[in-house]
Image (cartoon, rainbow, N blue to C red; front, side, top):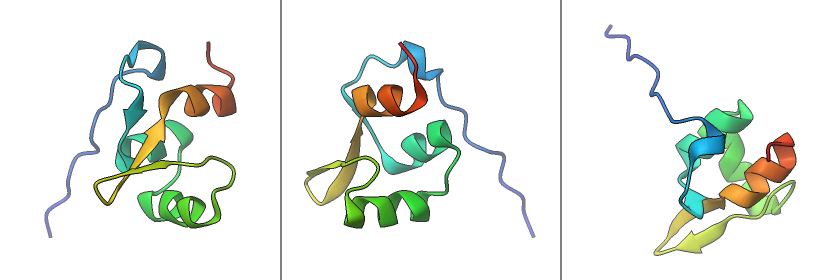
Length: 69
């Protein structure tokens, strides 16, 4: 069985895009992508955008949840 190295993402403070994909949002919030998808269905504690059938998580909301300026 091959182990995959965890994907590396930039620090949240340095992200300049308005949204990030599910895997990246989960990384910042220390949650698995499946948890993020459940949150998307409940729209709690953060509401993602849906762009072409994909979830896009607002960076401003991630920063708010984490208390990052």
